[in-house]
Amino acid sequence: MNNNKYEVLIIGGGISGGTLLYNLALHSDVQSMCLIEKYDHLDPLNSNAQSNSQTLHCGDIETNYSREKADHVRGGAEMMLQFVNNSSGDETLKRNYGKMLLGVGEKEVAFVKARFEMISDLYPTLRTVDADAIAEIEPNVALIDGKPREEPIFGLYNEIGWAIDYGRVTENCIAQAQGVGEKTVDVKLSTEATKITRTENGFEVKVKHGDTLHCKFLVVSAGTYSLHLAQSMGKGKKFSVLPVSGSFYFAPEVLKGKVYTVQNPKLPFAAIHGDPDMTKPNTTRFGPTALMLPVLERFNAKTAIGFFESFHFTKGTASALFHLMKDKDIRNFIYENIGYEVPIHGKKSFLKQVLKIVPSMQLDDLDFAEHTTGVRPQLIDEEKGELLMGAAKFSDGDGVIFNMTPSPGATSAFANAAEDLVTVTQYLDRQINTESFKTVFGVLPA
Ligand SMILES: Cc1cc2nc3c(=O)[nH]c(=O)nc-3n(C[C@H](O)[C@H](O)[C@H](O)COP(=O)(O)OP(=O)(O)OC[C@H]3O[C@@H](n4cnc5c(N)ncnc54)[C@H](O)[C@@H]3O)c2cc1C
Image (tube, rainbow, N blue to C red; front, top):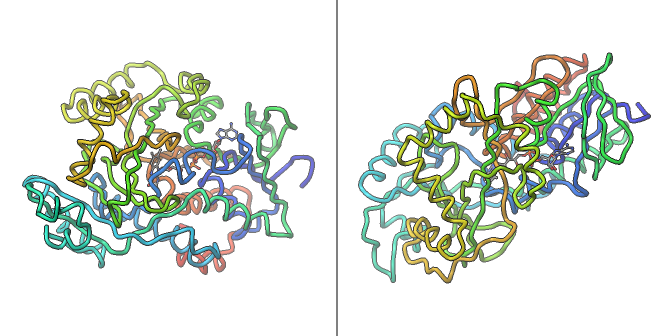
């Protein structure tokens, strides 16, 4: 199709948009598709390696996942790994680091032991580690000046754990899609969708400084902006977005692998953890913080407008926020995270969290990671007065999908894109090439 008319149009050049473009181009008979990105390059925001923790979340060390969620996330993580192994042609998109869940103090030690009983059958390579074993694997976690730290510690350790450069996975997907010669696969950068209108045959998408685009099926994978765009079309009105930005601190290489801590099960954000940064040699990154801010992009004040258009001060949002603040642990967590942003004091209070992981860490060894930050679009269900724990999708069988993707949205991107592939092809009466899909992912699209 020409004249800016496509079967499928995807808004958003992050990992959600990239994985779907790849699926449509390589594993379906959809003939014309276009992806637009408002910035002048791909993965400018949350999918970039600077913006997220680069963790392939499998559910083995994330204590805020139920057993069911852990199992579900594991399936999505496997698809990401299979893509890197079987399709990307680029082994450097992934790196193997061991992963540890660390319990500190009697209460957490007991919790970690119980957690192992609950999930160990799902993870054949997961094992328990006592203080001596931790000292072998991560000396800086267990020892201070060569002597055991004071508090009891106990962990779960999986030597098979992966960091993924999700930004480069996005670029790889899009390059592969564009390499499919016999189809129309357009990628338009510096192209911001400003208005979506339903037409007789699909959708008309107006873009800033460019020609209007037309499509039969529209997928909005615009990260923190998806809810705003959905609501401009009358969808998802009962939700508000709560943007939770995350920043990091750099330290010298004090950890060999990823070390996570016990999380508050009532919160969808990971507690501060330590990770080797796969894009920065000899560096350990600690974070992310979790700061609620009224912007859709950190350090971009103009995006406050989008926030205020998709956050409603209703009884439901007030109730969800009140319930959060009523809980002492959550209240402290929120205050602490505000504190991390205060100059000088912030670094000192952040150090307290890092000391839980590396008890010998010094203040001078921590440096705020400038512009290494992202925003998680958590949703509030205004009718239920609840904070949603994970991703959300609006897909009513009417030719449009909106994806809202907080963590672990990058890990789950291929699983999510497989779901969208099914919805899009069914709607357009197109076929999925299940054989080629299975060759890459080892499973059929659900
Ligand atoms: C601090 C932090 C740590 C995280 N750690 C992990 C982790 O370790 N593992 C994990 O799996 N997940 C992690 N996540 C979550 C993960 O980063 C996201 O779920 C994922 O990157 C979302 O990808 P996306 O493509 O949906 O959105 P994005 O990457 O945000 O992409 C959306 C794109 O849409 C574009 N866009 C927006 N509006 C428009 C418009 N109107 N027109 C055109 N383009 C538009 C934006 O510019 C952007 O490029 C983390 C997130 C944060 C913030």
